[in-house]
Amino acid sequence: MIRARDISEAYEASLQTPRGYCEIFVNPERSELQQISSKYIRFIADDVKKNIYVWDANLAIHTDIIKKVPVSFRDDGVFYGQTKREGAKYVFMQELTPEDIKSVFLYQPQDSGYWKDVLGRDWTWTRNYNIDLDTTLNLYRNLLFIRPR
Image 1 (cartoon, helix red, strand yellow):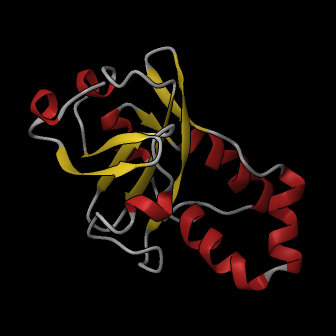
Image 2 (image 1 turned 180 degrees about the vertical axis):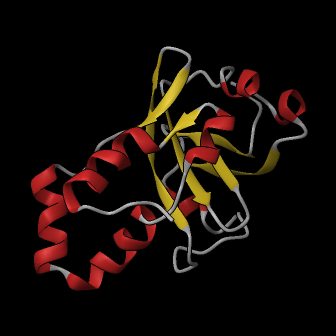
């Protein structure tokens, strides 16, 4: 497990969960992110402030973490999910099939606003932190003919 002293410049907060002690990091360096032992990390990305908060996916869920970081699920430009380590980087895990994403836009207009906002943004800045969100998001964009701003 990584301790705050190992990633002091990226350390944001911590909390004790039923699964263990969880540290949250903001915009960690690539080499520091590689030190997280889990194959999976969860994230909350804030496109307005260009901050990405990451933690071990095995230790906490988003609703635990949102209380500890200066963003809200309701804020514009906030996107959250889980990534899986693939080689030297983490890639956003496709949680929705193409049929699911089409269904959201056709039958769940209350949720389509969130996805329009997420898909309309350019998330390439997260690659600076070795996290690739766009590969999966581009599948959704192509399906719905949405281009990032």
